Length: 96
Image 1 (cartoon, helix red, strand yellow):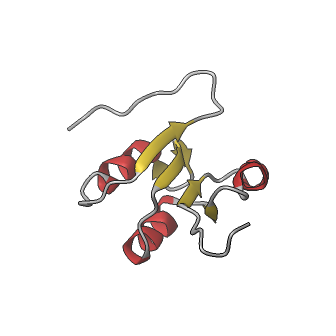
Image 2 (cartoon, rainbow, N blue to C red):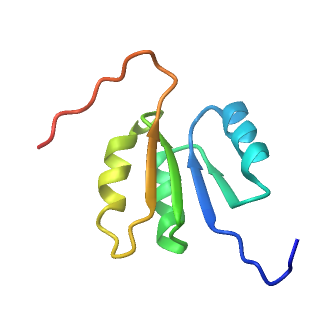
């Protein structure tokens, strides 16, 4: 790989550690990846370095991925965000 090529920064926010590691393994040739397992840890991480791409689980131990999505939309350089879930159905929170 060319040393001058800087990989885009990807953050995976999912409490399923094995799933997160599998995604990292599949994508690590293309992206610089951070694995994060809670909304609060993701918020702290985003304040330090905003990713170009985020994969966010809908159901996290400390909240809903949609809430994290809404917070990310406040940044001027909003990353590309994919919301994901392993659940057959996903209850979406109502907007306030």
